[in-house]
Image (cartoon, rainbow, N blue to C red; front, side, top):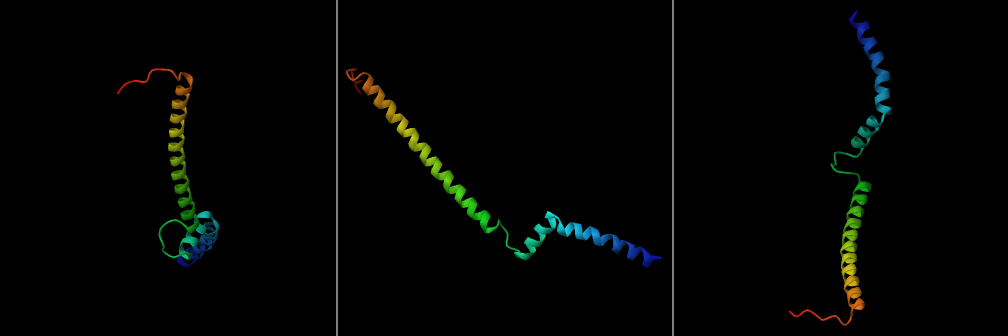
Amino acid sequence: MWVLAVILIVALMIPVAAILVDSPLGRSFARRVEGGSAPGPAPELRDLQRKVESLETELEDLTRSLAGMRDEVQFMQRLLEDPHRKKPTT
């Protein structure tokens, strides 16, 4: 009787194992085992992270530069609007 129960359980586990191995979870596990125990993201992901950080830094620099130019343009507009205005004494 026990032998029949073991055979039945093994027979039912074969399709379940095949479904799990072919699932995205199974593929992910296989890639992790295949790649070794190196923690961290994949090299492609690290490259993308580095590029995003670089772009964010450049965007911050451009934003600061644009704000400075905006101030300069406002200053020039005030000068051009009323060139004879009395300068404040400091």
